[in-house]
Length: 187
Image 1 (cartoon, one colour):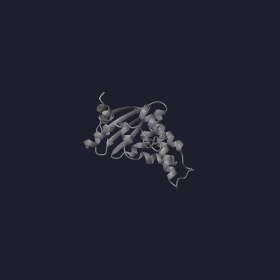
Image 2 (cartoon, helix red, strand yellow):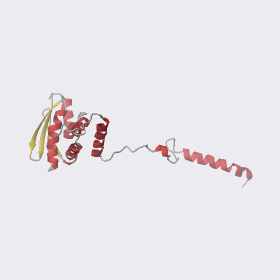
Image 3 (cartoon, rainbow, N blue to C red):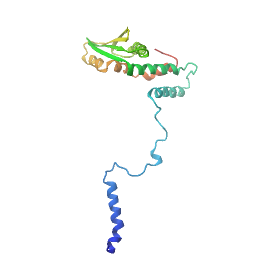
Image 4 (cartoon, rainbow, N blue to C red):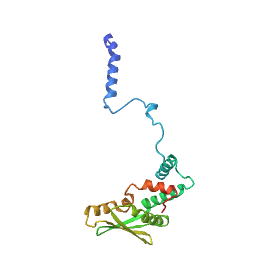
């Protein structure tokens, strides 16, 4: 090998390696992660019901007026079980009616009872509709109508949200969970 080429070899190799590490674009990083790249603390509290309870505990602990003698986290846990039963284990059959929809919601055992509790208690929290319930042997029949039955958008919203979507409407759930945990409103 001629001497001038040998002298330039380190520069050629360095240049080639530099080009290879940058040809993937500016979004790829080849440096090993550093300790500062990791989050300072874990943020996931676990399963969703556990996370909901943890959130309420943080609120209770942050409130100096919390009356711990009335706190009932078991009641909140039971409510969250109801929510899971209704969300994941019930069967919903929807039919259209003038101005809204009828939802026949059914299940067995704990699910049936959870359906009844949730349908009865959450209906009054949904605004802009009339919400009536009637028990059935398997669960409940919920009739939901727009306050103005001629409002096509309101009627479409009821039908589009369906039973479970209507249960989620509004920002009442965290307040409701806090009330349940404080020993207040319960299904």
